[in-house]
Image (cartoon, rainbow, N blue to C red; front, side):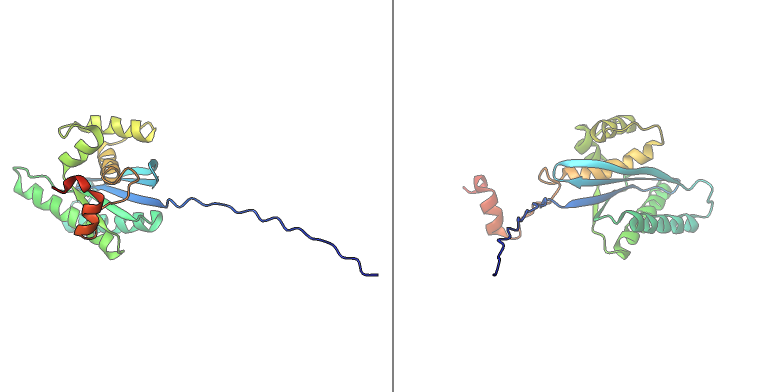
Length: 199
């Protein structure tokens, strides 16, 4: 006698989120102190990963400072695997020598990201302040306070660190609310996305 069994296999479909995580490394370049902050974003949410400074005060030789910046950026990239680098652009000041040194520091930081094929996004200091506080002339303290509010943490370190973090947050806020860029590929795509521009 042949006995048969009906076997019912239940299948459970697990729906995974289609919103990818992005890691953004923000840099406030400097030859005395370089601030940096790392955030991870998913959809409209940001989370703080790391926040600190690289202190270069004890290195007297300028080329050695640049070497240290390059090495530190590579270490940060290796550790956090950022998808993008957001960096503060040098501001125009009266001291030409300081501007040149700052430009070199920024260039070395950018070179480290390029060496690891990481896209770079540059923002003027006023743009960063405007983006994160609503005031392009905000003080470092105001920027730090807004970082604490947006990312829900308490900070007592150097303000260069929160400046670097603000560059990362600014980059995230430049997107469509999810952090993704929405540039049109061609004119037809642009017009389709912006029908109010057609006259």
